[in-house]
Structure formats: structure tokens, C-alpha cells
Length: 447
Image 1 (tube, one colour):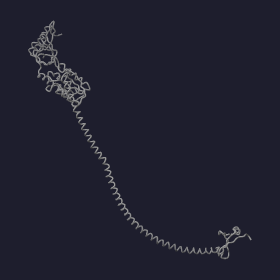
Image 2 (image 1 turned 180 degrees about the vertical axis):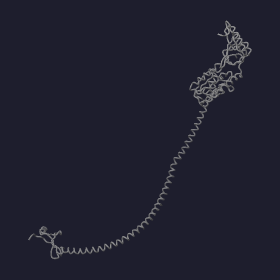
Image 3 (image 1 turned 60 degrees about the horizontal axis):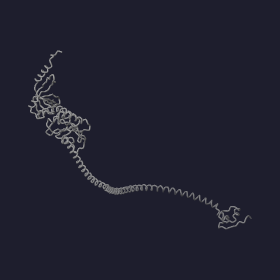
Image 4 (image 1 turned 90 degrees about the vertical axis):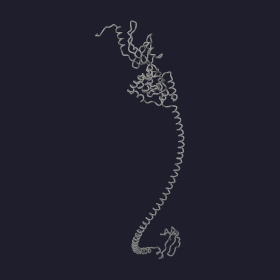
């Protein structure tokens, strides 16, 4: 190995001590943890979220600082001045490194505010202040998670505020320390645990007021980044109106008091809403009853309306029937008059035609009559001649003519002619018809 040495370790340790003391003297600020004391010095660690440095101070320098009793304690915010130092140790003592403080004072508001503003600018530049404010907050959550100290006025005030709003949901408590070096990690874990529960719809982080040093846990960078990235809206109620912490900037809502936080978490005043519902229900009931009365009267009027409408329609119908009847009668009269006029004309024309036809027929009939008369005269003459001839013939054959010549005609009593002697014998009694009368005769048999 191409290195200088070897050197005795004690020589190197003293050289290291000298080099450390040559380093620039500076001021450090942080939270005190692990405070201890020996007979000649006090030792502790100074921490923040990014690291820690072991520190020590001689007791006489500590007394010169004039700190109040108990100021050097775990959780205190200090500003120390000094530089790095190395204790070489020895055969019976272990070596150690520390930041040797020669000056010490409690961190003032100015120191903490400077750190707070620097961190605030950094988180704002990353857009972490807007993420929570974009989340939808429920009007009336059923389950609210609460991160606070197990004992303290903030818890009581929050519960009292929720009771005044007549909220009857579920509170899920996540108790954590709210003031010391363990507070920020514990609060971060509690918030993460609540956000992991699906029924939690909002988270309230609250504690009472105090100095900025007392509230410094709520300015922790890790805590604020965790809050900004949550899916659940966070309501911050840390300190009082004059207190400002970084968690207020990243939370969905920043409240001045736990009571205000209760109103922000449960935006609906359940008692007032119930009273409003009851008033509205009463108004609706009264309006409904009034509307029912109005509708009943309207329905009653409508119920009578059909009868009146029917009467009007019946009257109108009767009037139309009368008008139709009158119009029909007028129409029929006009039609009958027209038909009569037409019939008269037709009849006159028919009569004229008939008369003309009759005259023509009469003339024709006269001609026919004359012809018939002439024909009848000729036929009559012919038939008279024929009748005369027949008469002559009949008279030639007429029994009466025979009787007139002296003959007699035998007849039965019934008037039937007797044509033989046998028939005369059989009849036994006959009548003899002469030209001038009849006489009875009895037949006595053959002679």
C-alpha cells in the first residue's frame, strides 16, 4: 500500500482532535433528545427530520447560558453555537466525536418561523398544498377518524362540538403524543392507519394551543407529505386562531378550534336539519291538506260539470234536432213542391202525349170500328143467312113440327123420351105429348 505511515494511533488521534478544532464555528438548531449529564459536562443529541448530531457542553458554559431550569430536556428546541470536537480517549476511556457547544439558547419564534417558511415554500412549489383541497368532503360522514392525545381538552371540545350538531355517527380514535420528538412519527402512523380503514370518510387532527415549539411536531415534513397524499380529506385543528402550523396548509380544511373542526367535518347541522325537515314536513302537510281541499272542491265542480255539460249538449242537440226537423220539413216541402211542379209538368206533358195518343188511337179505333162494323155487318149478314138455313133445317127436324102434323111423343113421367114399346111397357105409365098439350097414359102390355 502506497500510504503514509504507519503512525501511532494516539498521535493520529491528537492530530484529528486538532483538525476538528480548526473547523468553522457554526450555529445548529434542532430538537433535543437523549439528555444526560456527567460531573463536568452535559451531552445530548440534536435532531431534525433529516439527521442528528451528538452534542456536548461543559456545565460551566451551560450555566453561563442562563437557561431556565429544566430547559435542557427531551423535546426542547435549541440553538447551539460551537464546532466539531473529537475526544481521543485513552487506555481506560473510549474515544468519541461530538459537537462541542459553547453557546446555547432556546430556539425562538424567529428561528422556527424561518425553518417553517423554508419548508412551506418547498411544499408549495411541489403542489402539495392543493391535493387535499381537491378531495370531495362528505356532507354527513358516517365514520370520522380522530388523531389527538388521549387526555386533553381538544378531545372533549371535539366531542362536544359533534354533539351540538346532533351527529350520531361513529368516531374512530387514534391516540398519539402531540408534543415531543416521538409525536410526528406517531401522528403520521395514526393518520395512515385511519386512512387504511375503508369506512373512515374524514380524519380530524387536533390538539390545543401552545408555542410554535410545542406545535412543531405538526410542521414535520414527513407528516405533511403523508397528509397531502391521502385519499381521505383531513381536517386540521391544531392550536388556536393565532397558531399556524404546516399541517394547516396541506390539510383539506384548517380550523382554529376543535369546535370549528367538528363543524368542518360534519358540514350538516343534523339538529337544524331535523328541525327544518319537521318544519318542511308540517308545511308540506298543511299544503297537502289545503291542496286536497282545493282539489276536492275542484273535483266536486268537475263532478257537476259533466251533468251541466250534458244538459247544455242535450239542449244544443234538441235545438239542432228541431232545426234539422224544420230544415227537413222545409226541404221536404220544397222537394214535394218541386216534385209536384215536375209531376204537373210531366203529367201535362204525359196528358198531352196521352191525349195525342188517345186521339190517334181514337182515330185508329174509329177506323178499326168502321172496319169492324163493316166486317160485322157482312158477317152478320152471312150468319143470318146461315142461321136462316139452319133454322129451316132445324124446323124440318123439329119434333114440334111432327106433332103439328098429328103425331104424339111418348115420355116418361120424368120427361125422358120413350123410344120403344119395351121401354113403354117397362115404364108402365107414360105421358103423351101432343102439339097442344100432354096427357097421361097407362101401358097394359102387348095386344
